[in-house]
Length: 598
Image (cartoon, rainbow, N blue to C red):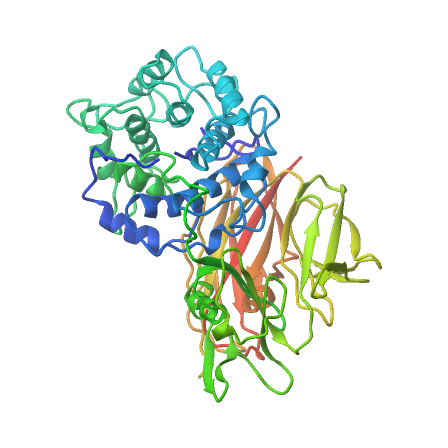
């Protein structure tokens, strides 16, 4: 069983690389790809789409991680490397450095876990650090934790399982252990002992076959140079068993439909990787590769952040056009006597002294956006306001803290030549207003476990970047949100199953006009063995940050508890403010987070 943050959380997830000459490619992939493209983007889906040969894959969800554990960074690094993008510069922090910071000299991440060592090895190898001290030492540590039966578990000293054993095989081979080494042959023999008469593989010997175990086994065999088509029992291979679990919509059931009340299609991404003939890492980032033409774009509206993503383009104006579909905003460009003019984004239209202005690398260019040709490394900030407003940035000393632990939050502005403190800056912590001192610094202590979005929003300055801080031992599940606003007269829930599981893969709020609302019911389940306190956080378009309620409470005020094994029906309500001006499809993200309760 794979675990996260030492909580007994979920049964599946492991990471792993593209075989240069696939030994097979399943004929069932077309429907599976369509299924994945209908789901909320996450790193696993990204890797699956790359492995299956798709192009124009969304990347916005990779601009920040949902937590700060080694596995959070590892899966994001693996997804970006698969896309050929630099994980050290793509997101809001250096993901590679953050992962390396979890190395204690012996192993990566939580000393009680092994799965983060496997993922950490693979992630660092995907960015050219296969021979680093962290990988070398962690390989030795992982070798020392092999159980007598040849397998590994998610944690040191626990019983073996096929999923983690497959991950260990892939990681160790990636780190330089030969496929014919006794360590690997013993591990594959352990997995073979869990193969059932239907050709599939169980989580442990004696367990029924499931899609996750099939997928990890297939990818491990590919890594070891073994053709999984020939790894049969009763002339049936894990490939054939995995294909038998595909539903009409293209997704893969965890187990045979109708045999488990907890059945779901969360295994589809891993199945697609395996059935594409791929293993892990799915791809590698090469630091010397040519610039891929993508640039960091942030768009700050009058009252909210409209977009924060990476997008390709030639000019500063191109980025606005090219990011519209990904960030879900409308825009209007008019042709004036002086050239193209960006008149409107997301319903915010230039009027009087207020309009859309831009910075490149925090400085105001002397040419129009359509004439500013971007160079490698440029970052573009668009904002709605008056000329002369200065850009700001926010730095936080720690992003993972214990309750009550003090952190420094620093707000600065760029005066055209250097960064200076924003005296008395207004700092928002999940929209609760705090004030910095004259040096622009806020000494912040948060006593309640949870996930907090922190940004500077001071009058006379452009809103800053947002930094996410996790307080306490918190697990979370991200939920994509979508709705179509119809001025003339959709929420998606999904993601990676952790301890707190949401039963629905999507919710459609339907087209809504300002002043109207819609609601849906979802079931949240605590599938772990500890009691949880549950909260939520919402980001994205203001229609969600201002209009979403959970069980009739504002999302920031919602709180509930789930004892181990308990499920509860939860109402998610969206009310569109009557003064909301924008039209079109709007997107956001709802995070259900949970902390251990006594």
